[in-house]
Image (cartoon, rainbow, N blue to C red):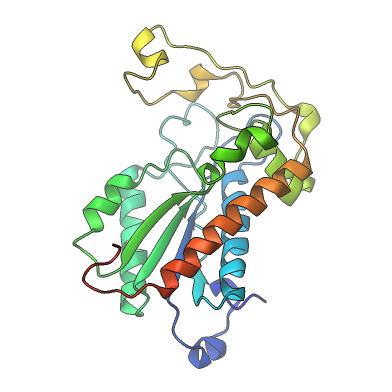
Length: 255
């Protein structure tokens, strides 16, 4: 039982506990991850990172509360693959907004939205909710937290179900990984130079972009690499949670 994990807590413990300073809302997804990783990969990963980050913060005296992970995300460009489970951006925003309202009602006025799925593009939602809620909102894609040291751990950067995510799977849910079945993760370029260079953006239809939903070669993955990236990301996020919990909610916040 972790005292920061709402799923573990009883009402008796909640009644006796001092108030929580920060809520952490993990966002996952349900989608294919190449041929070898489970559909719950994004949710499993973000839940581990959230739990370890909250544990790091709790050990340093921060009253943080990890909420249950949302196991669905935006999958509009993955729907060409069977059983990708989509929440449209507006639907996901409504779910997050309702949960933020719940935090406000219970006096938790700081919240980190911890995102584990690249399709959950939510910066716009922070802007929309900025004046609509007393909860101070922050957004973090956990997989970007260690990009400055990424190449010291992994052979190359990849996009989806490659070396990094497979290493996370081998570290945290190895019984669900079938690495021997993996596709090499090759991706196609579009017919437009401006899109390929990043000057023009599109939403990518993954059934055309990839062969089996993987973008990046997973075969160099190891559990040790996954543990190292987990350590770096969770410790950095944990330090931020300590700072956030201690910061007064004055008129100048967050400056």
